[in-house]
Every structure is written in structure tokens, then in C-alpha cells.
Length: 204
Image 1: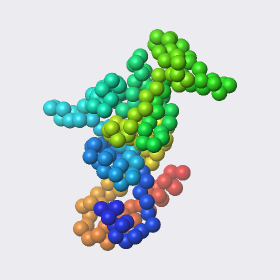
Image 2: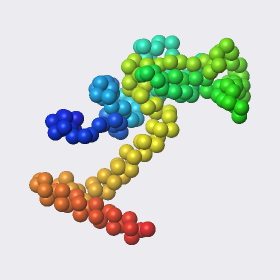
Image 3: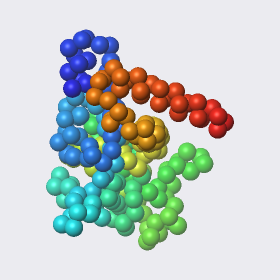
Image 4: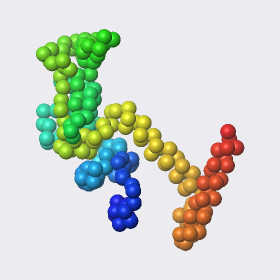
């Protein structure tokens, strides 16, 4: 609905990133956002088991990559079972590299044997060690454009959690039950936000 309003009124707005919660964790929603050019930041919520509890396979299987083992958040695992390091994203594909191979103090790629369970470089002929190139279109739910293992995902998602904390404060006043008139509801919402800011200033 928001995209339709922006288009209908020719507003100078461009939705680049959508920060959602577990209710938005559905593959069709990821695909829709990708078609619209919107990057998604949504945590994996899990499937619903027979007893009603949310469950998620420890190592989900993606048909596009049958030989790759993934962690629960979509991070691929190396042949030794370690979470791989996200190197870069380019042209719709993620590059994941060996978690024990990285640049040393001189800027050279070096394999750190003490960080590998076997201590042996399984791809000594490659500068980056064992590496994978995974396309987002294969499964944007497990392979979003901004990977969940990245610091950027965690930094941006904090904006969502701060908004949720603010919403909980507003829910305390039961605004959804106070009136059915939109204008009166907006007035009450404004007064609640004034009260919230006054309380924060008093606490400071």
C-alpha cells in the first residue's frame, strides 16, 4: 500500500531497506521485495511444529546448492563445519571464504592453522582458501543481500528494536481502545509521545 501511495502521488521517496520482524519471514515476501528493489533485514523466525512451537532446521537445505551445508541463519559452513566469513557482495552474489584465511599485518593472505579444526588448508592453491559464490536469487530468505552474519545487519536492525521499545510504551496507554475517531486517536498519540519524552528528560 505504501508503494502504491508513493507512486500515485509521485512522492520523491525511494524505499531502499525494509526492517521487519518474524511476521515478515516468508519466502514470497523476500521475493516481492527483491522485485521491487528493496533490501530486507528480517530475522529467521522458524517454522511451526505440530506442538505450536517455532522450530528451524539446524542446517537448512537449499536445492540450488545441494552440496553446501548452511547454518540456521543462512551462513554457509566450510567442509570442516566452521562458519565461513562473508568477503563481499557483488552483482547479486555473495562471496564466502575460509574462516581461517585472512590478511595478516602486511596485507598478505595467510592461513591460520590454529583457527581450523584440522589445521590443514583444504585449498592451498587458492589465495582465499576454500570459497563459495552464492546467488541471492537462489533463496533470498537464507541469502539476503545484507547477510545476517554481517555487522551492518546487526547495526541496522537495532533501529527496529528501538522502535519496538517505543511502541511498547504507547501500547501501555491502550490507544487502540480509546477512540475510533482517527483525528482524536492522533491527538492522544501525540500527547503520549509528549509524556514519553518528558519522562525521559526527567530521568536524565
